[in-house]
Length: 308
Image 1 (cartoon, helix red, strand yellow):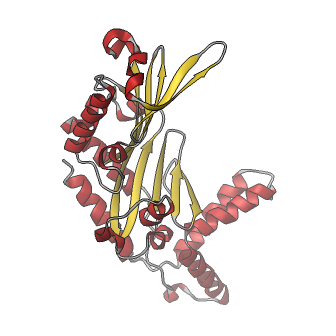
Image 2 (cartoon, one colour; image 1 turned 45 degrees about the horizontal axis):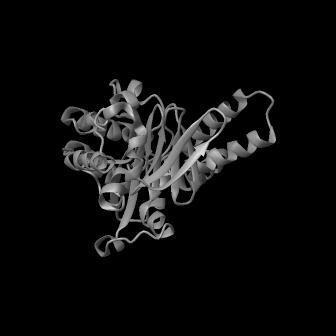
Image 3 (cartoon, helix red, strand yellow; image 1 turned 135 degrees about the vertical axis):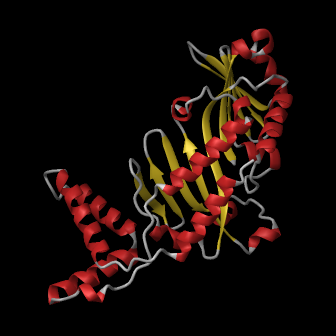
C-alpha cells in the first residue's frame, strides 16, 4: 500500500556514527559544498541518497526499489522485505529511520476510463479540489494531498512497461500523501520499523479509506420535472442539469476565473456564489447513487477490510 517513502537517519542511529561510510555503496556520487556546508548525493537503485555529517536522507519509491515499478502493490510483508533490502544495500540498519514522507496508495480497476469518474467526486472538507488535467484530480491542504490519476497513461508517459495482463484494464490510482508533520497526523513516532507493524499498517490503510469516504459523492443526474411549476423553474432545472452533467470542476473553474479577475471586492461573495450554484445544482437533482461511485466505494472498502 506504500509508494513514495522518504527517510531520515540521524548519525546517532548509524553504526560508528559516520554517515560518510555508506558512500562506497552508492552510484553516481557527487560532492556538493559551499563555505558552510558539504554533502554528497548518490543513487541506490530508485532512491536518491543525501549524505551529510549529521545524517542520511533517502528519497524514493519503495515498490520501485523492490519490484522495479510501482504498478505492484506492497503488502505489509513486502514493506518489511523492501526496507530490509534497502538497509542491506546501505550496510546500515534503517529500522530506526524517521519517515519524512509517506504515500499510501492502491490501484482501483475500473470499468470505464479513470477520467470518467472525476465528475462524480465533489468537494472534501478542509481540502481544495483541483483538476489540473483531464486525467488527474487533486485534493490539497497544507499537510497532506490526495490524488486520483490514470496509472496507465502515467506509466506510458514515463516509458514504464505495463504487464500484458494489465494492458487492457483501466487503472485508477488513488493515493493519499502525507507530506508534513506525519508523526503528529498519525499520532505515532513514525519510523521505518513502524511501517510494517501489523496494527499501524491496518490503521493507516483504514485512514486511506476514511479519507475517500469524506469526499462528497455526486449523484446520477436527471430532471426532477415534478418541481417545475413556472417558466423560471424550467430555466433553473435546465441550468441545474448543465451544472450536474459538467461536474463540480465547472463551478470551481468559474469561481477561479472570477477570483483571478477580481470580480468581487468582498471575498465572501465568492463563497455565497459557490453556495448558490451548489444549491441550484441539487434542487432539481435526481437522487440516485451513480453505479460508477458504487464501483469505487466497493473496491476501496474491500482493500481496507482485507489489508494484511
